[in-house]
Amino acid sequence: MAIAYREWRDGDDLALLEIWGGPETEQARQFRGTLAPSGNAPWRRCIVAEDVVDGVAIPVAAGVVHEASLHPERLWAYIEVDRHHRRTGVGSTLLTMLRHEAAQSPSGVSRLRTKVEPGTPGAAFAEAAGLAPIQRSRLVVIDPGALRLPVFGDGSEAAASEQVEDLATGSVELSDVVGRYYTSVHGWDSPGDLSIATVQRLFLDELSGAHGAIVLRAPKASAFGQGVPASRKGRLEAFAISYAELAPADTAAGEGAAPAAQPTDVFLGHDPKLSAEEAQAAVRDLLALIAFQHPVLLELDDSMEALRAVVKPLLESGKARLQGAETLVVSDPA
Image (cartoon, rainbow, N blue to C red; front, side, top):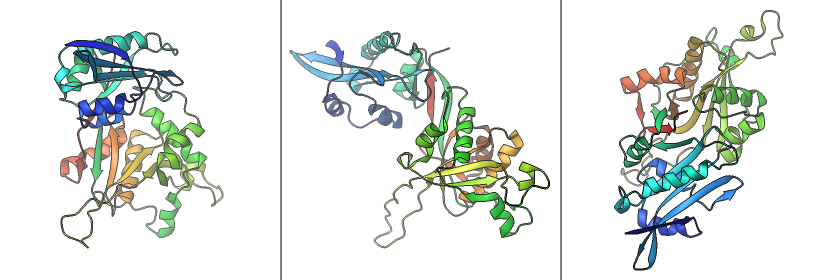
């Protein structure tokens, strides 16, 4: 076996797809989209390994390292090797080459990070390369009616409408809280400075898939004290942003049967200024509302302490369930 290394070229994606087949993990599916020609705007270096047999070069592996505008303190890296060429040193050589390229990144950042699924060859390779977990992420489906509906104020519709509101996704108030929450739960991998415009582009505009937002507000008096005009609203305590719903699953019940309800993808968070108890209460109340009649899909990082505290008993009681395997973000040591 003679292995040669070169830069990525157009058409390599199709050649490698024939060798690799379908992605083995969700992380592989996502990262394959980052394999592309090297460039400087944004900075990316992509290398292909070829097995040369009787003068014919066949791509069998590829690796990429690139900068990220979001979470700029590390570089993303990904390596995939054909099953028949694993444990032959190809992956290790690609990693060495990527580290050499990373040392020359224009930002001066050279630490690598990637995502792996526990128990897979990719996770074992990352561990052997010295990358250690810095975060665990899970997808959790909350069943309808998993939480008791909250009672607001005196229990009247007016009291509820005072605290629960459909809010336009272009709201500056919403963008501010979303940005501060995202930053607060990503202290393990800082997103850098998030402007209102950046938050709206990443989480709230049409291109992000956002199509609705519900917020939970504190009672008016808690935000502005006594004697304030009745028209003033309480501070925004928690938010739930919904994204494009998944297509209904096929049903084996026959034509005309109602498809099973599919969960709505939701980003749920809270004002990071709240105390731990206040944050849990706000998240619990809003989750109870949005998952009252329909299932909800949440991405749950271990760093999301309030949401994790609310979801944990639901998982233990069977009122919520994991969807797919968990993801570990692994990184070079500091």
